[in-house]
Length: 195
Image 1 (cartoon, rainbow, N blue to C red):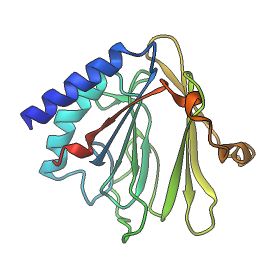
Image 2 (cartoon, helix red, strand yellow; image 1 turned 90 degrees about the vertical axis):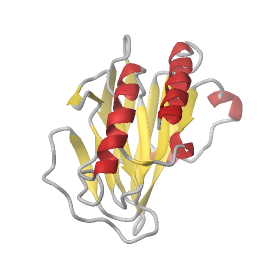
Image 3 (cartoon, rainbow, N blue to C red; image 1 turned 45 degrees about the vertical axis):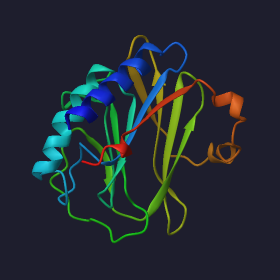
């Protein structure tokens, strides 16, 4: 784990220093460090991952962390050190494709903004260097069940706007030209770390 942690720390430090060029830091991986599903988050391996990843995400102000492993969907409020904080990371468990769903949950913690266990898919749209939007759609009927927009404010603070209307979705499917996204995102792929 030491080498992986050192690599991640170096990568996040670089991304954080490049904020003027790439304002969004999005981390991705397989096993999520934060969540309230009974399948995974209480196990020793999950606690170890949380102990390694969350302090790094806090230190380098990761905006969004996307994970799978549990076959459920859960989104947190922005968190720093396990507490709701507007400068924190939004953790998104989006493991709702394909396999049998994990439908057992611990009581919903205050930091858990939304959770469900229905097959579905997500759409991530970086609107600009100030706005990023994510929508979760239920596979069965395509209806949107969760949607939020992260809006960057002064410093590392973020405001979250919740969008439970479908009126903006018509514009969503028009993919931007490559040059529109160039430089906006710094993605760290934690999939290389098999923990």
